[in-house]
Amino acid sequence: MPYPTVQLLPDQDRRLRAGHPWAYSNELRMDAAAKALPPGAPVCLLTADGRRLALAQFNPHSLIAARILTRNTDATLDATFLERRLARALRLRERLFERPFYRLVHAEADGLPGLVIDRYGAVLVCQLNSAGMATLEEPLLEALERLLAPAVVVLRNDSPVRELEGLPSEVRIARGALAPPLELEENGLTFLADPLEGQKTGWYFDQRDNRAFAARLCRAERVLDLYSYSAGFGLVAAAAGATSVLAIDRSQQGLELAQASAGRNGLAGVLSVERREAFAALDELAAAKERFGVVIADPPAFVRSKKELKPGLRGYRKLARAGATLVKEEGFLALACCSHNVAAEAFADEVRRGLRDAGRSGRLIRQSGAGPDHPSHPFLAESSYLKFLVYALT
Ligand code: SAH
Image (cartoon, rainbow, N blue to C red; front, side):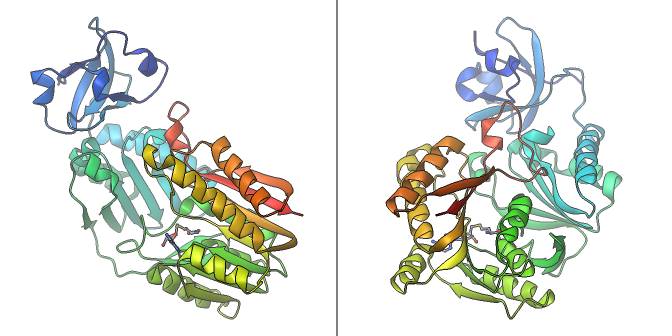
């Protein structure tokens, strides 16, 4: 079946030809026919001189008006197409991980724009974050059924980005039944997560390798896991031999999961949790002259839009200063930044400034990003959102 066509404006095809997967609304000819297409409609993108460029999902109401699915303009966007993409995503994860706990689909980077799927064994938790993906819900469920026959499929369709696509916020179980919390395995431990009411899909898989790295520094140390959520960092540190781990977060639910996971792994005696505002806690710990061998801070995105850039960058600087103040001599400071609007170098600059503000210096021992189940799209900078720096301080 031929798809309706949407045309790029003259000279607006260079970025797409270079491999970028999106066309913005101001790059497209938004004529009456285009505007009348339902949000998420499959379309064939044409260059200004009428050549067929790609098949995309189109949303006339979104700034990201077209998301490319394939450069093969003869393809059919159905369950079979989705299954092939899902199978490719699965093959990569099966090569990377022995156990079925990972991000199975990382949106554009896996050729499935707007789609996130986290896998907790037989439970799949999906986020359909674009109008295009939302229209493919049925074929997507069919493809998942054919590929993995999951016991449970949760649609965690409550991420704020859906609003930009004109989509409602909802959480729904599309297949099976679920009584949270469920268990997942990571870094040799068992963690509890709540895919229905937890943050995001219930677990932050992106920090797996960074948790393992940070844990190596924690043996026989007192550790602060700031912005801990369910203590993914703190419990791996505890298992690696930390003498004590203090997890701080403002989410009661996250801290309860952390404690339950600690119990499950025989680490309850090492972990203590405090429900606190992070900066207030940092101030108090500093005033009490508390010191830690390792301070890990994994805050929420301080910069969620371009206009938050300046105050957000100041926030990272302040966090680095306050964190460094609590690190003992020859201890370690690990800082994460998940703001996709903040470039790696800009984040690194703020951290350096923060260290200087604290009167500390040190050696940078790790600069990394998300784990490999969160691949980056080579032409979409936003897909490499996570930055992680570890300093051995002096
Ligand atoms: N480190 C966690 C993920 C943290 S996500 C892991 O490895 O899984 C960011 C966390 O910051 C969330 O749990 C959120 O509840 C918490 N948070 C956001 N603002 C906060 C604040 N002002 N004070 C304390 N915690 C905050």
